[in-house]
Image 1 (tube, rainbow, N blue to C red):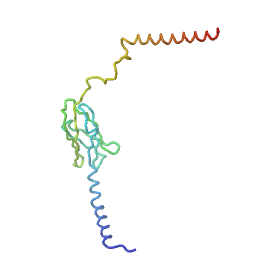
Image 2 (image 1 turned 60 degrees about the vertical axis):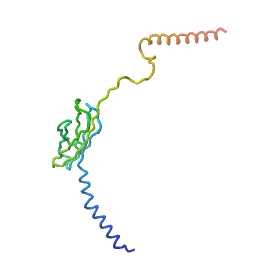
Image 3 (image 1 turned 135 degrees about the vertical axis):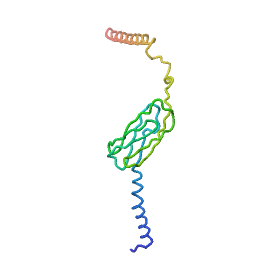
Image 4 (image 1 turned 120 degrees about the vertical axis):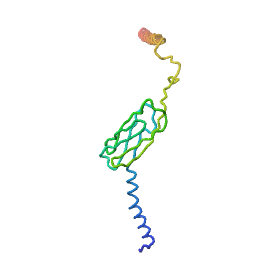
Length: 162
């Protein structure tokens, strides 16, 4: 079988495209900064995970939220944990990664207000909750158990006599 010249040229062009443009895109994707979780209430902790070209050297992460923090090598990535200060106003905050080779990446952290629930969930009247009713319920339960035992003894005794 003989292949056509246009098909061979098309294969050559696609091969050159993948050869020269593929690694550049992969190289650009190797520098990143992840914030986990990306939305957090005021006062909670945030995990930072980053990658530079060389993940064996520490890098720095800067934000108006918490200043400058070093991300250290761990498990092949650069990691750190920071706490959102309690006086922070809700909003979006930019976080920048600065690699040792002067390359950068950024991410956004969404800070929301911390809301405390006003009261517990409505789960019933609370009749079984300990308090004023507990002694009465325990006494009634013991009385019913005692009556059941007495009735059982009378029944067994009647069978033997009769």
